[in-house]
Image (cartoon, rainbow, N blue to C red; front, side, top):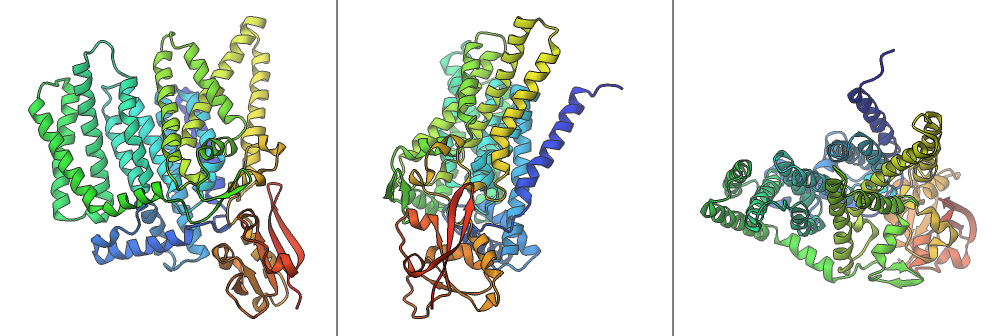
Length: 567
């Protein structure tokens, strides 16, 4: 039998991985309503209504700005009623899930160009089952889309910097960054990373003047492609003025690309004109979307109005330790050690042929993680998901570490037993892959569809409930389904905390009341969530007077308590 070619085997692995990665993202999408999803369904309806009516100036719906989320969520309006419902939620999640799967596939192709076939396969696997990334991929929100487009921007720009003659990657990175900015405003942090990336790949044979002008031209092309993407996909800019600006930016892009291709950096007058043009367009764009920047300023300086539970305290701003601890809690036990090992392996081999470039790439990836962690730590408004762009980058570094560990193992077996020790290599591979599956993948998959309840297995040694806030809403749908099985469930009156009703109401067939509404009617049941207990919102009616009837447990933690209230 003829063995499979390298290209055929890569395609086979890619198809298998795509199918496997689709299962956790595209199934059970109607379960587990999470925070803000109802709001984004409403936003998408308002957005699509503005587009259909031609009221493009009304397409600035929120400061996030969440344009990509609203486009994808609005697809559901072609198949179901636009009002908020479980069916609409599932359709919106499906659209976003498909887009993210395509994004992972593109990232795998870019990784193939950067590191080769096996790092691409391993990296796509790590990305597919990264717990926080997977949990956010199943939500109608902005974070997973922004993180994916940031990843594509980073990988494309690293490819361009490593091979400047391949200018299509520079254009691709600008387009991806435009999508990232349309998805979420915190993507703008990446602008601080772009010059760092250029400096990492500076050719020592060129003068500083040549480097500066080449970087200048690359930056112009990058920003022009970014703005063109924003103008094309955000209806707010669909007017004659920005059409003219778009034509000018297209001219700047073509000019900068041609100058980079020819290596001619002498036309300073044209460069100056291009800079002025991009500056004018950028300034007018900022003025048009000033509400977005006002929202960013508010998020930087104002803590969220919902309390955090962090290290035994109830706080509005958990401080500097929050995001470093999030990186430890929301990754698997292997991710951070393998990421560190990957950087260490590449550093030790940096003098070997081909590894110097890979080491620079790794430094660029590390810079992204550090930059987002630092910048977001400076803000007052903090949530775990805000740091999501750092997690796919860490998974890429971990995949490099895993591949280098396999190579080190093979080298050790060769040095110890000779180059013919194929059975030992096979045994080593099987054991290593089995450990990877049992530690990295299985603990995540077994939580389906409640991936947001995952936390690092190392923290099993302590009580995670005393360290950080658990995911809001997890288990409420199960509580509703439990009560729906009661006789005459439509007549039951169930009480929840006001902010938690959004997670429970879509699944419950009976009547609702709120814990602090001052109602005189005594409910039949009260549902209390761990999140409410952590924030100090209990005792409530059920915990004071009720009889505990049922407990919803997820990932070994009691999340929801159902109390029967005596008459």
